[in-house]
Length: 298
Image (cartoon, rainbow, N blue to C red):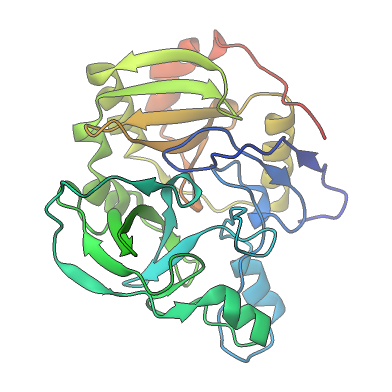
């Protein structure tokens, strides 16, 4: 990321989540390569344990996203690693009442503390069953979701929800994999289109229209972005041309994605994808009619 890149900092809200409310987005040279995503953007601790970060490793590391949390260093989100994938805690570690649910299979225990590891100089951020939150908690399959998409963490009689956002090695999740396991395009009960921060709803789609849009989004392809692309993304964000999609699920939670229609890009979890031409053909009129609400600067 070029040091001349515009710094855009949006106001922080308490609920920062993939299925939750307002977002704090920072676009800078250390910000996950300037992704317009659903968490605060910063650099996550990286790969090899006790090994200095090389420039190539650091570049890959910047592709992950980090979320501010109360019990972690500034710039770190609450997340866990399972089965070589990264899951972010929904609503920044909000507890859910899952006491009436019959939990699925027990999948393991979060045994490696990423925050403590950072403090001692021992990085464990890429280890299986490492976490920056709810360490010691047990992982369970959610009865209503594929564990490749969402998991439940139980700790001290509290339940937390975590959902897929990326891979622990920072390689890209293929769109087919994400949509196969999330089933968003078949289970969505609606979709709201909001401003980038997520505090103003511009339009709402019913279940049928939401599924049709998601079906087109599911055919997106992995985006290989250059520095100029990130500069365009930063510009689009600052001009209010980035929109947040809240895909509502049957249990009334939702999954957030970030859409930049003029650039033909969508951010799902930790990755960017290029939308197919059919998306513009079908929805250019809808998005061109929406306000371009310039976000506040700090």
